[in-house]
Structures are given as C-alpha cells and as structure tokens.
Image (cartoon, rainbow, N blue to C red; front, side):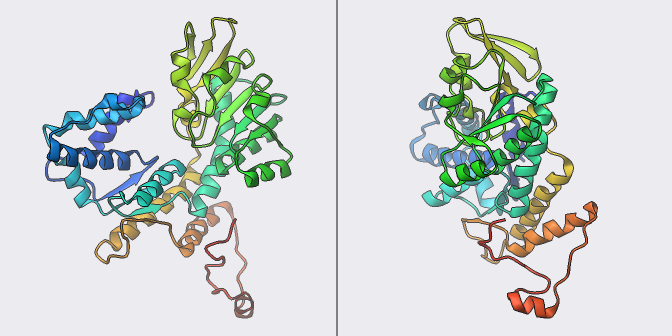
Length: 378
C-alpha cells in the first residue's frame, strides 16, 4: 500500500495481500472496513456461480464504481484459478474487524446466513470505540483541517454530520477550537446528547448556506450531495472522517456539468461551479481526511485498538479446534476489555484504587474485575 493510490491500485493491493500461491493463504485476517472479508465472500460467491453456469461476474451489473473494480478483479482471476477464494475460505480460522462500517457488514452477513467464518467485532470493545473513535478523532480532525487548509477554526460555523463516537470527538475538537458547532442526526438519543453539550441540532438543509466547515462522520452514504455543495459558501470546506467516500457525493461532483477541479496541493482540491464561479474545498477526495491530510490517530490511542486486535487474533487461533466460535460475530469479554485498559494506565501515570473484599462483596464483583456488566454503557 502507499499514500495516494487509486481505487484500482487499492483493490489490487488487497487481492495481492490475500494471494499466497496455489497452496497457501492466510489463516487469520485483521480487517479494516471489511474490505478483505468482502473480497473473499464475493470471490466465493462468483466461483460457485462460475462452477455451475460458467458465467463470469459482470462489472456493469452495478452502478457502484468501487464494486465494479472488485468484480473486475474477481472476474480476471477466475479463469486462471476458479477455486482460489474457495480454498482461502476453507483455510481461514476467522477475522477480527476494526471499524464500525466493517462490523455492520459482518452483522449483515450473519443475518443473511452468508458469513463464511467466525468474526470478532473489535470495534465494539470499549477500549476501541470509546477511545480510538472518540479521542483519536478529537485529535486528528483539527490536525487534518489545519494541515490541509491552514484555516483558523475559531469563529467558524462547523457542521458535524452524525453524533456517534466519531462525531462526538469531532464536535468536541471543533468546539474547543472556538467554532460554533451544529450537529445533524437521525437518532433522538444522540441528538439529545448533542443538545446537552450545548450544540445545535438541525438538518443539513437548515445550515448548508451559512456553515464554513462540513464534516461527515456517519458511516452511511449520500450525506452531502452535489446539490448541497452548490449552495455552500465560497470556499466552504467539505471533508469526511466516517469511512467510505460515498458519504460525500464525489461521483455527482465529478460529473457536474462544467465543474472545474483545481488542485491546491495533494489531497486538497477546490471545485468551482460554473454558474457562480464560486467553489468549495474538498479534502482527501472525500475519503478519510485524517489519513489523507494528516497522519491518522496517535500511536498511543491506536495501541488500545491494536491490543484488542492482537487479543482477538490469539483468541480465534487458540480456540480454532474447539468449536467455541461458529460462523457468527462475537465481541471480546469484559475482562479482556479491562485488561487492555489496564495495560495502558502505567504510561499515563495512573495508580488504581483497590477494592477490599468487603467492598467487592458489597457490589457483587470480583476484587480483580471485571467491574461492569456487559450491558454497562461507558
């Protein structure tokens, strides 16, 4: 992998990473966004169809430009090795998934009965989502904004689309930098949380013409469309820190009649609309701006996430022959979540209070934990 690779190059790299020759393949996958998992599942599906009908995948069967590339890669490999992904599936012990979006894909596969191997949902470990997603984005959003644009955040009107863990971190960073923050939300609970933090909750249509900075954090698609972008202030900044580039309608923007793209510097483009001769600044081509325009999250908070990944991988491998993990999605138990946190306390100079036996008995927890039930919301 390398910075600035095209979609074709990205999926070529993914396929290359999985191809270990005719007799090999990964035993375990550490996935991010569910892309490697998606490629294997689509590959197996295509091989089954090809074996029965000799029909190859048709990239033109979808309007999604990225999925067209996936189908093209699978199609081009089928004739040379029509069992490649099937062999890979049979060898795989399982996958551990890092992201909210990737986890959604896994749960969809589980619900459809199409999940091919066990999966551990690392994202919903507390020491991942409540740290990486929240504090990591709180750090990296303003870092990416300032590196890309050198804009002063104080005094600006900033719109954060979505108020989950990622959105909470982004809104906090922008507010602390002096912006007036407005949140868009579909979930009444998240909306109420935003209001209790002193933020406004409005629709994008309410504020599209007055805001200076727009950040998508939803993990959904079609959040900021080209018709929204046409109505924005001159030089409004539009960026995504959610996951895929389809949160922002980049396809609609690229195909808008007469639109002009001016590259200010790598990963920072001004798109000028012909009717008004005014433009917007889009960061990282609509992809993750904290990676495209900065260096992502600091190593310490990523250590929390990656410790979960290591534990998940060890757990899958250790239990591979026991049948403990079926073709379902699992989360790590609470005691391992607490272990991840405990491993990171010393670096920050923490000294934990210890329960006495009487205290532990009084609240019905073990002296060494876990201290919270699985349903506890941190």
